[in-house]
Length: 147
Image 1: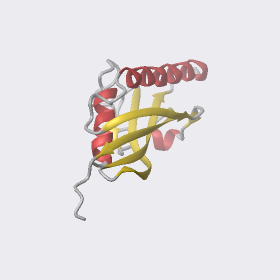
Image 2 (image 1 turned 180 degrees about the horizontal axis):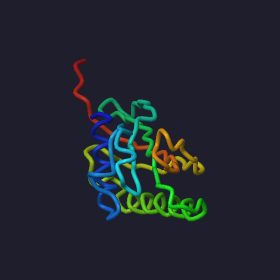
Image 3 (image 1 turned 135 degrees about the vertical axis):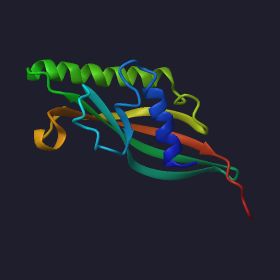
Image 4 (image 1 turned 180 degrees about the vertical axis):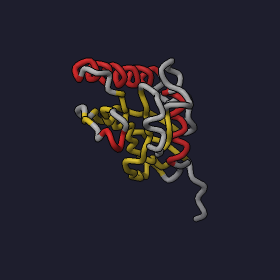
């Protein structure tokens, strides 16, 4: 399996929520910020470890980051409330699908952390605040052994 499989599973799961779809959830691509959407998610690679479980099975432990952007709405307090609401919607959606929409090999995942809200430079990110949600995803595979 690959990181692409995991990120596709996460994107498929997140887009089950009404606020997210193909116009505001992207894999490792920040170029769409500023295109007019109220919220964006960029799914990124955060790390990887491998763990031998048995001779016939291996765990791939992926760290995935979700950069969650919420547009400024005029009042910073309202923007921050909206940002927290967006993150909670993502968490709730992911928790409803613990195998990430039946992504092949995914055994489980957990929310590894959520960052505080970070204001973004309006010149680079078109007036958004950002929170980073870190996911730890375990994928169990049975590799073909040659020896």
